[in-house]
Length: 231
Image (cartoon, rainbow, N blue to C red; front, top):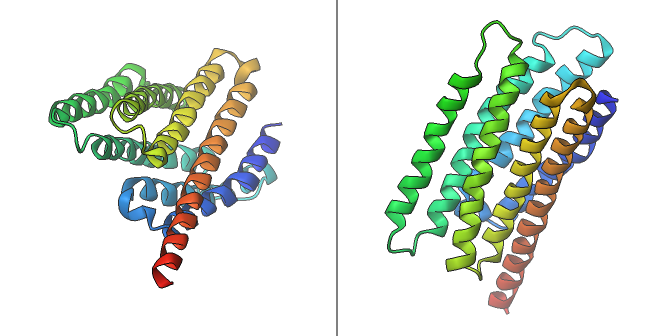
C-alpha cells in the first residue's frame, strides 16, 4: 500500500510542482518571492532525484544510495529553504509596520533557536535515522506552522487586501499542519503509519494546488496588464 501512495504522490505531485515553478516564472512572481521560488524549484528537483531510488527500492534494482538516504537529505535541504521562505514572507508582510524590527527579530530568533533544540532533544545515534528525524521534522513543521500563523495574523490585521500573500501563507499553513499531524500519526503506532503518510501527502498536494492557482491567476493578471498597455 505504501508503494501505491508514493506512486500517487509522484504522479500528481511532480506535475503540480512543475506547474507552480512555471507559473512563478511566467508571472514573474519569483522576483517578489525569491525564497518561495527557490523552495519550489528545490522541491521539484528533490522529487526528480528521489524517483530512481524509489523505483529501485520497490523493484529490488541496485541503487548507489537508499531511498531513505535521499529522502532525509532532501528533507533537510527543504526544511532550511521553507524556513527561509516563511521568514522572507514575514519580512515582506511587515515592511510598512513601525515596529517591524521588533516583530521580525522576535519571530526569527524563536524559529532559529527551535531547530537546534529539537535536534538535541530527539537525536539518537543508536536509533535508525528515520526514527529521530521524523520527530525533528514534526517539531520543525509545528514551529513553521506557528510562524506561518503569526504571518497570517499580521496579514489579516495590516494587509487584508494582499490576497496573493494570504493564499501563499494559507497554503503553507495547510502543509505545515498536515505534516505535523502526519508525522505524529507515524510515531503513534505501526497501524497508523499509513494514515500519517496519507495526511502528509494530501497536505503537500493541497499546498501545491493553492500555490499553482495563486500564481496562475497572477500570470493571467500580468498578461492582461501587458495587453492593456499594448493597446
